[in-house]
Image 1 (cartoon, rainbow, N blue to C red):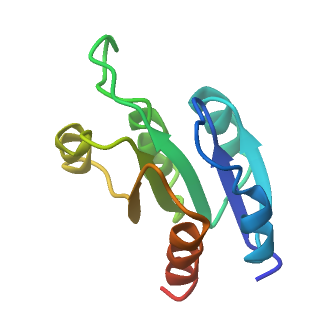
Image 2 (cartoon, rainbow, N blue to C red; image 1 turned 120 degrees about the vertical axis):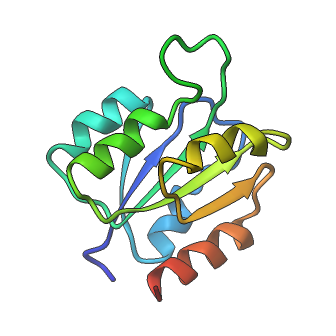
Length: 127
C-alpha cells in the first residue's frame, strides 16, 4: 500500500496527531489546514482516503457544515476517495442532513483513539 495517499484535514484539532499512525498503516500523507486548501489540492491529487473533521455551524451562509464543499468536489470530479469524518458528540442530527446528499465511509465520534482509527483504516483498505 506504499502508493496509497491519505489527505488529513485538520481545521480545529483537539485530538491526537494521527499522521504517524497513517504512515505506519502504509499511507503517504498530505495535510491541509482548511477545506479550501484541501479542495485546491484535490484538483491535482487523488487520495485513497480523506480524514477530516465535521464542523456544524448554524452561522454558515449557504451550507450547514464545513465538509459540504469538499464532498461536492469529490462528486463533481468523480474521485473515489474514502472519507472518514471526526465528529463531536451530539452532532449526528446535523450530519444526517448532509448524508442525505453525500456519502462518507466512516464516522468516528471524538475522542478518537489510535486503535479506532487503525481499525477504520484497515477496514477501508480491504473494501
